[in-house]
Image (tube, rainbow, N blue to C red; front, side, top):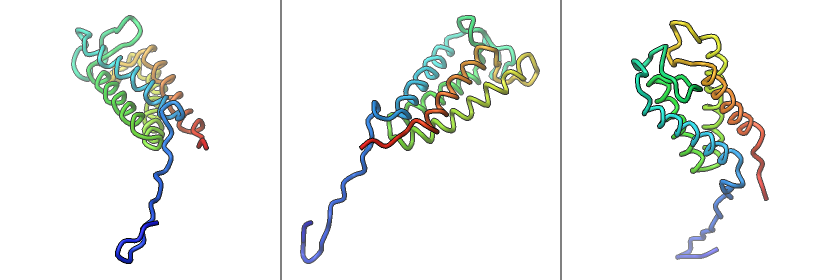
Length: 150
């Protein structure tokens, strides 16, 4: 406590913010975000993806099917996950929850959209599995892995 001209002030310590190694949410967000950001960046190099919302897309390494819209989604999601993971545990958990939920929805819905005229993100089996694995990892981490360390 200090006293200046009759005013008493106290210094409140900042709340403990776990490091990236100590926070599963920060680590998972950075890992999954890096994977999707890299896939999206590599996707920009793929030729003949068609129009922005092409239902056919183009193959990336015979695993993923890409169109420009899906590449943009991957880059934005990856960037958001990396920024949140580098920021704080709370922001990482929040972003992991929402992007994880969106990716799980993409993975499930993608199985029904394959080969249809409404497959605006050109989903294929590789995309669906990637979305499900990434989304479930993010959701599981956001829901159950964060514990406060003392």
